[in-house]
Length: 134
Length: 130
Image (cartoon, rainbow over all chains, first blue to last red; front, top):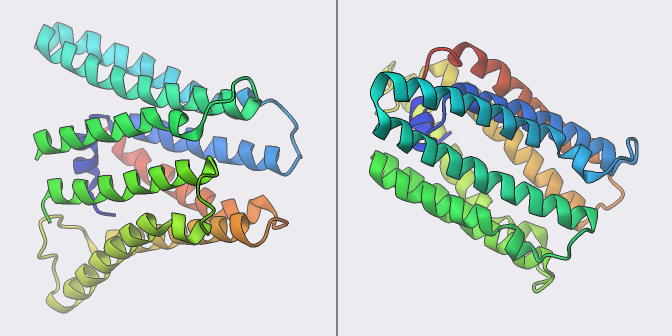
């Protein structure tokens, strides 16, 4: 596409493993979504979103291990920066998915502009990071 | 293009698409879905045009002159991925705007192919790039 893999890793501040987990979970989610939309698998939206939430928890676990290793081998500052960045990214994506799920499930009547607000913040932050990385 | 320019293009296109989608889903606009997807069409056009230009230049000169230094196989692969992504978006727009009775799996097949192939292709890199 527009970016090489190393540029993507640098820009997003994620490892390739995290990107891979996101890709696989998105694939599973779209399969579940299709089954739900076709009325083949009538389950709640929380079940459909389960691969995405699992992806967040797996990435959270992975990041915590990386942060501990960074703290031990490269010091507090590097570890804190990594924790802040990965935590922010994971939190924003998680909030978006949770709001979307609540809206689809009918638990809350939230406008789409509010649901997408974490994504707006995410892209602002990514743009700032792109300026820093370049 | 420098990284910041490419990131800016991505940012502008995706933000414009998200804003238009939010407005459309909140039913404040009754635009055709093909119009809502305009930022993504612009983005796809730029990416495909750049890839095709680089592919032609690579075939004529014999090596990659750009700073991205992708092999010929990688360029063809990226064009195929873009083709799958574009097919998915077109089918999604058709489903949303004109063919409400179209089965969902027809829409998602290109996306599944794209994600599945990307996941397989990423596996060797998971332990290399940090």
